[in-house]
Length: 286
Image (cartoon, rainbow, N blue to C red; front, side):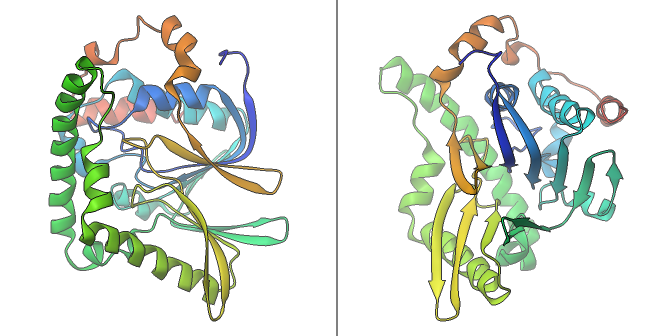
């Protein structure tokens, strides 16, 4: 894919990027963001991982994501930042607006006379509601698993067997994890049907999905944008149709070649919280 050919997208939904963590695929996300021109962007939670921000891990491609978002704002593209649990500190700024950028906890859009309900999804997570400390502990364990996964992939690729996702295997095979995902989807779709929504769009569980749910009161299309740690997925809306976008590394081979000098692994920045905050704040000054 040429870096000069940009696809137009009416609505782009990104969630669970987790900037500031080792697992974040910021370079791949940046490639994708540079390849498109959206009309409306919905950042559906956990864009920044404030829970784990104290590690002071901030490679340059993580900052490039922030800068790309603000470039969109400077171009007049509407960017809605819906808060999640890992960036819940931003919830106190609900209603904040700067140009075409806004912070919200949830939102509803009218799409061709159909209502689409957007929210991150942690509000329906029982673990989040009653045992936040357990959820945070799980987050640290997940980050450790990503580290282990990197080593496993190094060996797997060396043996010619390709990438392996340990956490995906756990999610897909452990009965408790499967039940958790199914319960989450049922809860949010039942509530969406009850309130007359045609679409319900979430993040949070890192499981990209697009399917119809029905109960005795009606039906709704459930969508989940996945994440940019393992799945590297987004939701795109064009011509009254939703699709799940999945990142394909081969599509961006030319971009990676052009940017070979930008080696993320050699540009880890150790800075104080104040330095990081000031640098990020500077990107908001348009």
